[in-house]
Amino acid sequence: MLETSLPIRHDWTSAEILDLLHQPLLPLVYRAQTIHRHYNPDADIQLATLLSVKTGGCPENCAYCPQSAHHETAVQPQPTQTVADVVAAAQRAKALGATRFCMGWAWREIREGKAFEDMLTMVREVRALGLEACVTAGMLTDTQAERLAAAGLTAYNHNLDTSPEYYNQIITTRTYGERLKTLDCVRRAGITVCCGGIIGMGESWGDRARLLEILATLNPHPESVPINALVAVAGTPLEAQPPVDPLDLVRICATARILMPTSRIRLSAGRTQLSREAQVLCFLAGVNSIFYGDTLLTTPNPDRNADRQLLDDIGAIY
Image (cartoon, rainbow, N blue to C red; front, side, top):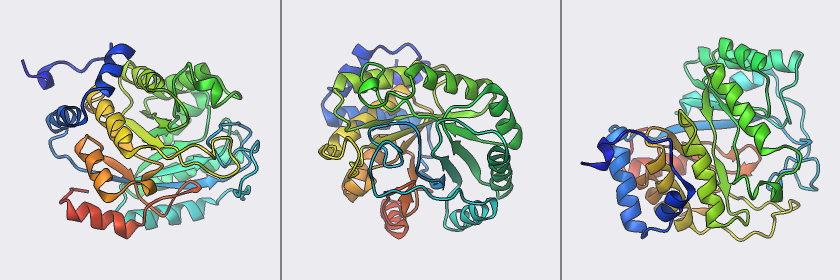
């Protein structure tokens, strides 16, 4: 029986996943591409744009993040953008070809009051433009999730970042359980889940397998899985981490595709460190979305024109 005719699994073990990660690269990519073509026959690549609505001053101590108030970085707190500014940015993103507009707030948790009411208005306005709308703003309550769903929110992003075992080496101001609880709130409200992680933070291959295990045993799988390579920013505790080997990133993308056949695998932070050829290998491995724009919150992102040229050169549908 062909592997792609089997039901989608939610019972993967870390040992199975680690075995996949250690397979020879070419057979691994072939397997991922076969599954990708079966479940995603159009093989389109979605363009998503991410805007930082509230930048800097975050009370969390995530070791990778230049927006943390715990770290001395070049990122300074900025006033929260207005509804009009965010809608204008969404209009520009749509005109440039994006179909998903993501909005980020450097918060520990969603704040009630005017800030939340503005967020709801932004979601409604972005959806009125015909764009998918995604929000990332930390933890939230069931009531907040329900209100976001009523406003039309397409997806809520809340990454797990790494394995449960390595998590305390990266973040101590929020528990892994709190992250999983947030995902439960999102799912209960009927909003699609956007959840992935970061590689290159000093974690082991076992940690990478465990992260993928947590994601792949969620039922249903996250509809969106961002795969990030660490961008080592001066002033953060991880500033001296070496760049991720691009072929390691390809392995992660291919394995994520095998584990979660119908999810959008999003090649996210760290793309500026990748050659055109490395990005094409990621697409071959099952990546079917990129973040599209000059910045990704506060870190660099490839030039829009360069992205479009690359996608045109490989004949991608976007």
